[in-house]
Length: 277
Image: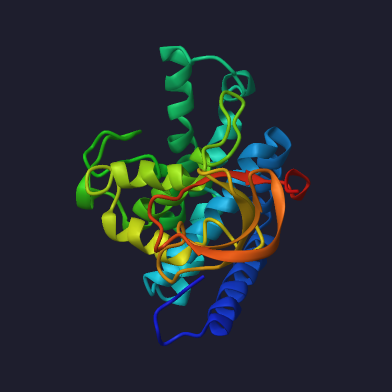
């Protein structure tokens, strides 16, 4: 993860770790919140995993935007709790593999308000945290839900979590579809930039998050296979690749390809190590 130039990678990691630790300590202190999270895990483990991923992305964005520590902790708490309202949505609806009916989609949409009410009733938690759950499906143009608010009516934290939420949902396996590739998830965000999502937040996400982390085995759109070896600062979707396999054969002398300089190349597939020669 890359932060403002005044930070080193090591300092960024220390700060990130400390913020996550503080959030976990807050959860441990507040048994009502801990119970809510436990209920989420018991009800549907995808929601729990998704919430954790969204929290990591959200904090990375917040740090890139230089949000102060106190607000980062509130933002992170809001992110990890943003989907708790889904425990009040029928599980058959959440896990339906086919297209949702209009009534079923209305049930799903209610989770934002349910989450707001559940968190708001925990009186030791800031109302701002509850509003993260309430607003993470609102969109700049008013096309979101549950209230259809737009622009500056949406809290900045809601706008940040919206970006993290959409990216993780798009790039995760769901009961009704396979995960998209990370660059495809990024394209969804860019397609809505300025209209549905705050462009400044999207750019912060792209700078802060290595969507293809070092050590990941990949296949390029020309069939070559390799491993991600380094990141290009500020463009996490265009890393350095060490080519290990060409035309199905492992090569004797691996070589580097920089996707930043080879725009015709795309990562087509993420691989298990067993899928490489």
